[in-house]
Length: 74
Image (cartoon, rainbow, N blue to C red; front, side):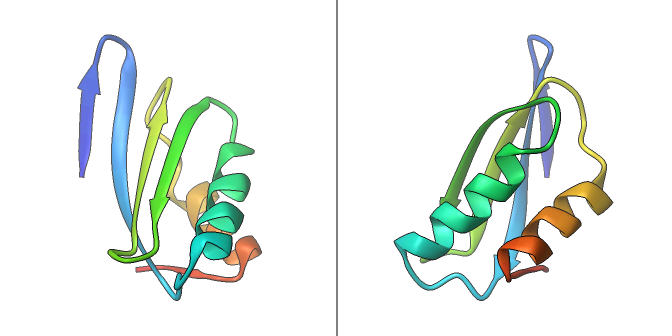
């Protein structure tokens, strides 16, 4: 799901395997490293990761970041 407002893009991803705050932090940290990302909010309870970026992100870059954190993009 993607929404664009005032030159920022909000995208919600579904990530499997997150179970706690440490998981949220690991996923957030890796996705934050992608160029253009301004905000990441991961919620283990729902598996939702909300990313705000300056432009639409390459899904493969997000997938690689989630994989690096040890989880899987659904």
